[in-house]
Length: 133
Image (cartoon, rainbow, N blue to C red; front, side):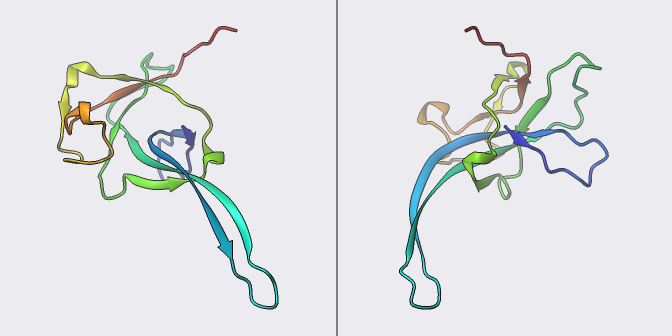
C-alpha cells in the first residue's frame, strides 16, 4: 500500500495497492565529469503489479463496505517502486463470488505455479486488521 497521487479524479482514493512480485537491489556506479572516482551506491527496489480500484462498487465507512480492487490493464500494471514509498502491507480478501479469470494478464511469471495462470477478479481490502502485542 502506498499513498495515492490521484489529482484528476472526482472521487480520489487515498491509497494505491499492489502485489509485490520481487524485492531486488543493485549496486550502481555513478560516473561524474571531472577527475572524480566513480561512486558506488546500493539501490533497493521492488517490482510491483498494481491493482486498480473498482469505482463502480460503493465502499467506505459511509457504505459499510471494504474497498474492492482488481488487476488493471496489463499495459500499465507493472512498475518498479522505491521501498521507502511503501506504507504497510494489507490483508486482501478474495471476492470468491466473482470467481477467477486469466483475461487480465494471461500466462505470466508474476503468478505462482499453483495459481494456474488465473487471478481472482476482485479482492476486498481489509481495512480493520488488528495485531496483538
